[in-house]
Length: 73
Image (cartoon, rainbow, N blue to C red):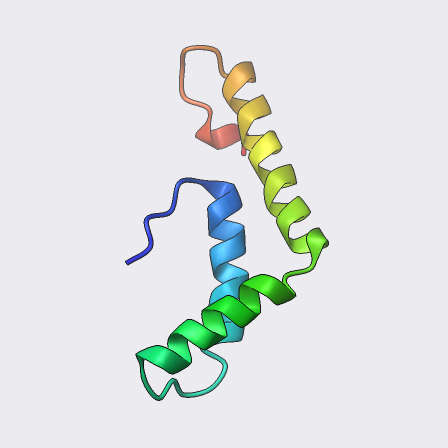
C-alpha cells in the first residue's frame, strides 16, 4: 500500500486511482503499466492543485498557532 503524506499526495493519489482503476486490472504488469502511464500523463494543473491545497493547510496551521486548526480548513 502506498503511504500517503498529506493533501498533495491525497490529491494526486485520488486522480491516479480514477485513471488506473477505470477498467479491470488483469495482472501486476497491467497495474504497473497503468500507474506509470498515468504518472507520465499527469497534467501540471493536477499537481499544482495539490500544492495549492497543501499551502492552504499550512496557512491554517499557522493561523491556528499552537492549537487545533482543522476547523479552519
